[in-house]
Length: 214
Image 1 (cartoon, rainbow, N blue to C red):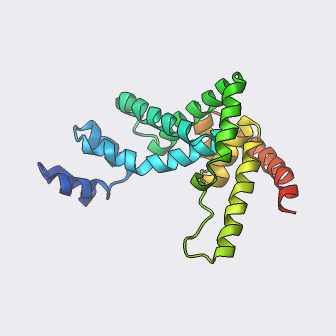
Image 2 (cartoon, helix red, strand yellow):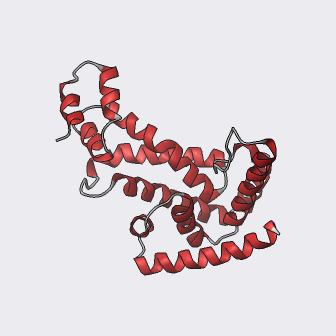
């Protein structure tokens, strides 16, 4: 048991102290604290994963407002089912699995609704300054900043053209930095399938983006 866990157990009726101690814990300990009755622990999980999941879902479906709705749904499901979470597994893999499934469902539903697809494309054109891909450095020179924004837009354009099952593994690996094993668990595929899809996604991504950067 870590010192932070021991201190947390002693931190009765001290909200600020409790929040500070929760930030020192790993995910498994925060989950255990929530299941042990500490409501503040769930907010700590939200703060750790909200932005990361928003970036992941947005990169996958291309609609920021809808991504925000889906991330809210992720946390609703986590709150509802956390007591059933297998604590021998990684919490990050579990929550990304929920987000991935919701994103895939959104893409399938959208493919059956041309109006939604048109609205999404139109919306992306007007939100170039709100995209979550972080290619920018606020201390960069103006010409460097312009180049990085342009690069970001090219990458997002290329990613958006990948087939759904290739796009998800590409985003998880290349933009989220997940391991092959984590991707396999999140997507419910074996390692061979993950590596095959990622290889095809990389090749397709290279084909798409090459003419854009010439």
